[in-house]
Length: 328
Ligand code: UDP
Image (tube, rainbow, N blue to C red; front, side, top):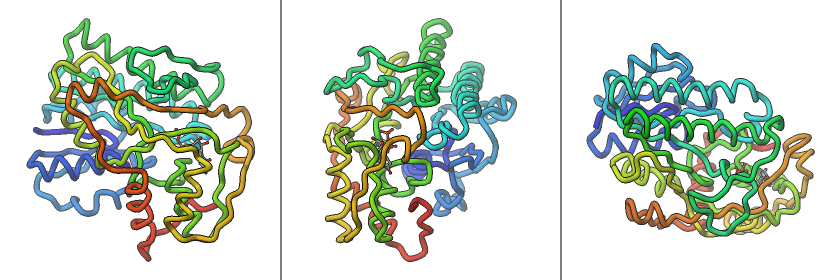
């Protein structure tokens, strides 16, 4: 495979780059370093089958040029993280809608296979235990920045679906649920790197809201092979596929597990959403995927537990030279 990974200097993209190179493929990474980091690529930067290009998915000509040299595109570049969407709503909409449109246009022109990374955010406030791909979206006003990310990803999905059904593009949409592991930054709001950084620094763990909200966290090493398998799965083209864990945990319990595994004596403090994220934020009380479709298509079975995930993040953050930017 000759693969282009947009957003390849980011958390998931850089793990995907490692995985593809190890499997013998050629990899080109396109990243504008908005939230990605060259440090994520340091172990592969000299690899003979690796190339890094700094630039934006909004640069239509650049995306077109890069697409002409590959057979497969993993489109992971996106503005992501509740703090990013809050602080740069307009730019996030542009990146997440026009960036995807540029990738789809280029992929169609050069007949690339494409994987479009979407998000469980498209389901919005639907609290069904075991969200299926055909379930309804339940979202608030598009005028709230909170829902603009969900809106953008939904537009991406509709665009992708139309490219497949009307123009014959070979593309699959993957709805990623909470994905975690080493290299994920807490700077943009993600809870596990934040809690771990806070615990290791002896700072209070900041639980937003009651802490009763439920999430399922999947290790990035379980997610990455699924992405590679799905871009190969012809039966998946034109569909959306959930990828995530089904191990549920409340955010309050998550804080206690981080304290137990780090041995930290930090306190747990509860902040209102207004204090933690800002005015007008509405949280999802529960988000649990049904991954039957992924299991049928690619035999998707995540093997790492939440404790495995927490240990891997704690190990990374315990390394002495790490800057703990997430603590506040
Ligand atoms: N959260 C929290 N404290 C933090 C960061 C996040 O309590 O310091 C909560 C957040 O409100 C949400 C959950 O943790 O209920 C997961 O947040 P994250 O941003 O990691 O992912 P989300 O599921 O919101 O996309």
